[in-house]
Length: 389
Image (spheres, rainbow, N blue to C red):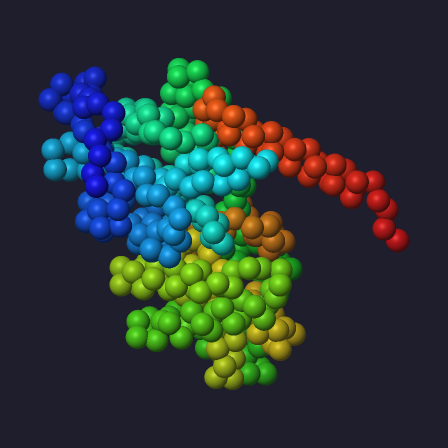
């Protein structure tokens, strides 16, 4: 059911630009948004793989049970100019039911970065205020906890300012610190930018592997066998990380990524880098290409080839491919690993914003959050105080 929320507004500098805000609440309505959503995504100044329609719709289909869709859509005439994808869910905090608003695409066993709204280019400031106002007017929620928004988005600051005017408690802060690598125009330029030791390592690892095995690097492009590729990626990921990672553990997680990968492959956005060793698909690196940036999502390799460093060799082949393709940066997304620290040339952030209404349930949410933070701090301090032999 479409629901009108907020009021019709005219832009301050555009008296004829009447913008209407409505609420989308069903999967069928979400499906109907696809053309306009994808158009807006392609035109928006700030956009990611994870706030594209493909990820959002697949996530809702697989994880939407016991949740309520709350997508705020701003239109001018028949053109969509803003989308804020949300859902509502009731959780329990300190024994009390708490009605939460969260960003669509995040939750369950998924942890994407760069979620949040889309805005028509050049209209971000006014649309951010408009959608923030509409969100705060939604009925029956205690806490809006919106995490992992691109720090370049206008929305977090607009929401914080709007919440302050409404005299609501609001916190704004860093969610994730993400490593990035700037890419030069030529692979030889990249080799020249690293130390002589590192350059020799890259060449020697490839040479050692090629001396012992027949090897092949390629980028997956077989749409019919993509499902089998995802199963192999999940297997290699488990072999590499074991219980240290929950990725690909659930059927929903695997299907979500397969659905998104299918869409991305059809639109030339998927970069599933592969390394064969002796005919065996031994290492895979799952990434997306968007706006001349490569975003690394997951990886895995068969530990039986560990002495030849297949993960490192594949990453370096992927880097060479990304540079040759004309990409400007490689983004490692969330997760702390030493290889990211070693390769990073700069860092970026995602931000989170939390708004609490004056309810007992919201107070329980805040109290639990403070308790968890203090407990974690005590654990960290204790760990630092313990000297291991």
